Length: 438
Image (cartoon, rainbow, N blue to C red; front, side, top):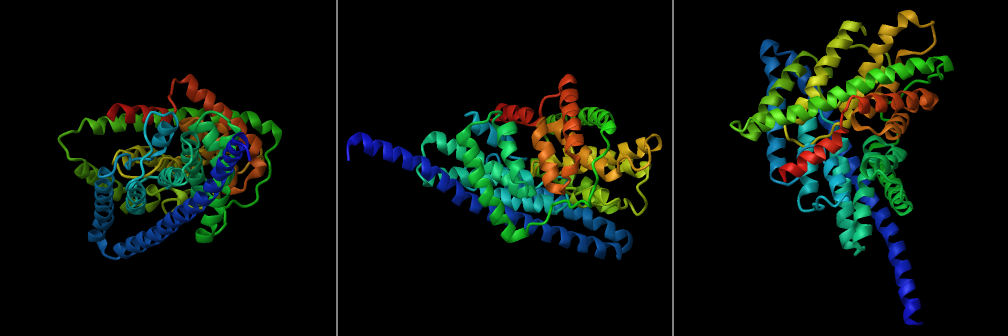
């Protein structure tokens, strides 16, 4: 064999090896991410049981959720402070690594994200599971690239691709994970990156299903496609959701800046104070806190809030509280993401929109659940500015394929509205903040 042919063969092996490494690492992402989700489910069950026991203790029992969330926030914050980039979502760090503005972190990041995220989210802070899982997935990808002796470009792609696999595991949404990589993290479609992401995402979702099963994250009863004349209504709904998303992004950034200015209060003490505030809300109604999956499930099923019906007053109250509690929880500097609370906020906004519009809409034109699903994707898009990711992610979570046209219409309107309002995509703002503080 000639030197040239050996070189070509070696190059082909390196190319094929990258996909093998991506598939194997994807299995690890699925098991770790699935394990994280399983632990969060157990933590939620334990928290609910504790709150039920506290109800039987009278006024003194009201202190239990306050102490629980305060201690959880403080401990999670203390863990995150020991490892660079462990606090917050971590998605901004994944994006910075792709842009070569930061280096991939491996040592202790995965256990810090896992344990810190479990404690923070499990204690009831208004945070999402997807941020830690995306960051853990990217960390596994970085380690796999190093151990697999991939070239620097493939290693960087694998870091990003396995971050997308993490998102797929968080919501059992493989296509959403792929679109997240192309639309949000990289802003480009590269055939090799797409293939690496597919290899990692498929095996990751398979691995996670071994742990948490294959059920939809937010199962929705069968919904019919709204009539075409309703599309302008969903367009208008997307406009309002885009404005809400722009306001939410602004509040997240400003809350972080305000907390940055509180230098005299130790970071862990600040986290405890924020946790105590969230605990007060939990004592009033647990649905006002947490990642929001239970709230979204009730809204999609036409359930009940605060012990009563889905009144406009109850929806407005819950929306206002979670609108503030989400940014405040994120400012506690614990591991935790933004996506899941955003989806719950969108479900609230969509349900409220339906409640306000129902008197002027013909009977049976569109259900409250349909508006809730569209609201989830539209508010997400207004904050993150990834319309295709938002639409596909929600379809994969709920199985509401019949709502694809309303979803795309509302996501388009939300993107344009947020852009016209001058709102910066949230992860661009968080990545810039990370660079300024480095």
